[in-house]
Length: 426
Picture 1 (cartoon, helix red, strand yellow):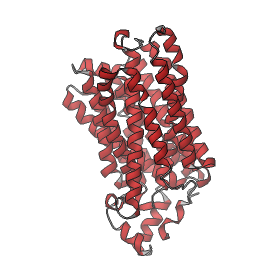
Picture 2 (cartoon, helix red, strand yellow):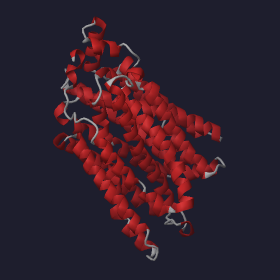
Picture 3 (spheres, one colour):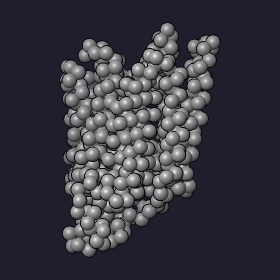
């Protein structure tokens, strides 16, 4: 445990949790309101899917450049700045009038949300006890699902998409509180002091003198960073292609191969997605403290693999009545969502793999490049494949991505419960 008081530690956990919650609302609102936005701005639906990808491209830029500020300026200052950035950009979505404005605001918001993930989890990993770091990481990761519930509430309300986005300017006020009252990571401060005094070992001193993004691709960090980029690319390709297409599948007419559900009919699936994901990320993080990060992650990949194969078998039976098909989707859909509980491990696992001077940059670079590549490819690629191959084919693809992720996980070191307080002199 750090030298911070219990009150300071919990204040930090709450701050990181709220930052992650707000970023989830920002992302999910666009996915849920994609058809309304397309209609209001007189755009093709595919153009809004591309806007989702543009936001994820912004996340990649946030990972490339913005997350470095967490290692150079300090975790708290950089976290507050990232929240202000995505809050303002999301709030201004309420006034968007064209595709250009839509894409520009999504790019800026993406930069902020991309930086927030890596900086927040770096800070969390350095203030919480190593014995239960996975559990608290899973709890914080579950804030994405709480944020999704909030986004669903906006979607189901009469507010409409403009007012829903406009409300999201308020997290910027929270960032002011964050900067003023949340203490900086003691681990980061000790490392900076050791660096200034020149008492790091020679290899670490030389590495810490480079720009963080350069150091992430040098020496033993290079292969680790590349593997994590690939892993996060596969994770985000699966999640964003599935989530955007499944929502369209619920809405699409029977002639188009969908379920033709109205907002009320879609609600059970939206709630199930979030309840299953919420519980699974908490469970995954907790299990990683007992089984290790890799074994827990592998277990959830297996659940996801089975879930998506079952989903395909249900969608592939064309002679069932529509209501019966809808009912039969609940179990495989639940297993699919549980598989994405993998996110409950990766938030805390990735920072443990890097030393203090790269604990924000390394995970941020990996996660956000993966989100940018996989997320930007996912929605438009899946949308195009639906036209040519149909919903069953597209909705089964994440099964094979989970299989690849499971194989890649076993190339990573096991570092669960690593003591992060000894880095300055390691």
